[in-house]
Structure formats: structure tokens, C-alpha cells
Length: 197
Image 1 (cartoon, helix red, strand yellow):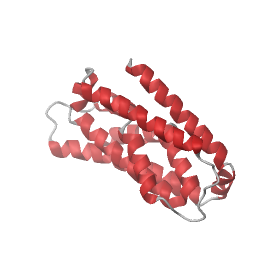
Image 2 (spheres, helix red, strand yellow):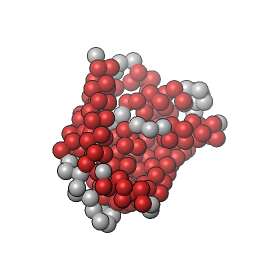
Image 3 (cartoon, one colour):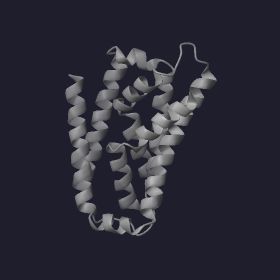
Image 4 (spheres, helix red, strand yellow):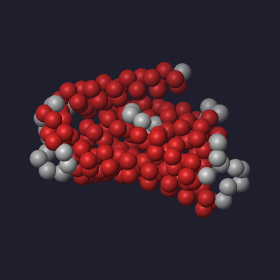
């Protein structure tokens, strides 16, 4: 069971989306440390969602509960805030050395934790493997596996990109990257809000 869940989590982490965009943007803006910390924060947010899903909270939230509504709105607000920050960025404020580890961590965590699509992903995946009455230790292991896979993937992406000439190319186009990522996040926020109605 763990191997199957692991494969699905790897494929989910590798799919492009706002998480990858934020990791790439933070790596360009702050170097390897900021990108790696963004990946770590994302993995921890991912772990919490996995634990919620495995523990059955997802069933309550899927019924239109206030918690799910609050997470949808919270996720949209974070996406709007991040998108706006990227759109306002000058694109030239790129560090020559690693910086902004804490900022990267917070951005990664919020993008993961306030994204109800991740919860929907876990509900879909875990419903195929999880049985009622699963022991707490087993739930923790499954959630930890998902979080470690997610964090490892994004930390690897940040590390590989920061160690190649590709980072210099991306830095030269930092303004365009910020605008593209900001626009993508704002569009995702609008889509999230439209689904809430």
C-alpha cells in the first residue's frame, strides 16, 4: 500500500502548478536556500493536509462544512496576496547569494496548506487505499510519506536549478517570471472563488 501511495504522491508532486511556480520564483529571487526552504515549507503544509485527509476530516469538509469554505477563501486570499506581490516586484531584486529562507518557508507552507485542491487530491488518492479504523501510527506514516516526497521533490528542483547556468538565465528574466507567476496565481485564485459559489 505505501509503495502505491508513494508513486501517486511522486506523480502529484511532479505535476506543474502554483507550487512549482512559487518554488522556481523563490529560487530565482533568493537562491538555493530560499528555494529549498520554500520546498520544505510546502512539504510540511502537504503533510498536514495528508494527515487531515487520512484522519477522515476530509469527509466532513467535503459536505460543504464551514471549515472547507474557510479554507477555500483562505487559499484564494493567499493566492491573491502572493500574485499581487509578484506583479509588484521589480524583478531586479535578485540576491547574489542565498537569502530569504524564512520568507521562502512561509510562502511554500501557505501555498500548500491553503490549497483545497491538495485536500481533494488526497481524498481521491487515499480513498483507494485507506480502510476505516486505520491506526493512528499508520495514518502518521502515510501522511509523513506524502510530506517527505513532496518536500524532497521541490527541494531537489530548487537545488538543481540553483546549481546550473539556468538560474542565471532565469534571473535575467526575473521581471517576466514574476509577472507570469503573479498572473497565474491570480487566475487560480479567481477559479477557486468561482468554484466556491
